[in-house]
Length: 188
Ligand code: IMP
Ligand code: MG
Image (cartoon, rainbow, N blue to C red; front, side):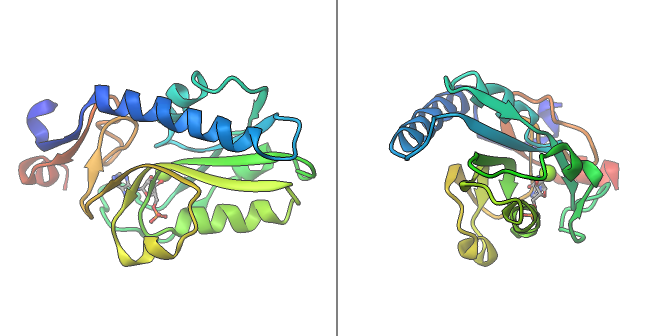
């Protein structure tokens, strides 16, 4: 699998260190709020699974987790095909009054996914609604999206590993990388 990568973009040690740092920052920000300190995490499946598993073990707060699922890159598409939020929004309580909510996704690309998710969650009246991603791609669209946390800014390339997939594969790579042309063609 490693041979399918043109380049390792971020190695696992660097990811682990940055995830710990991010958890400390989230914890400090929450402590500065008028709030009971309990959080509601809303991970967007499937790409965020590894990031979320690592991040939550660095967060000491009382928390509830509600999983939702969205997809915009069906199969071998490497550009967004329009976002679908599956019926999983019903996993989230209809009323988020008083809750400090943190939405977690793997990557901010066009921003469509988080725009759709936050639009919906805002109607449920949370006390705070924050967004956090592992990766933010440097593109003009992402500049507009008011993210609260991003672990890494990356170039506008299609990346896999640490939860992120291409055609469903490569999520189990422990590091993040860019696929080479051969690997992309093999799946096409
Ligand atoms: P957006 O809606 O365009 O911001 O795309 C966000 C979603 O697309 C992410 O949650 C990912 O699942 C997927 N995605 C975007 N870019 C990549 C990539 O480079 N590799 C793998 N998945 C990606
Ligand atoms: Mg996703």
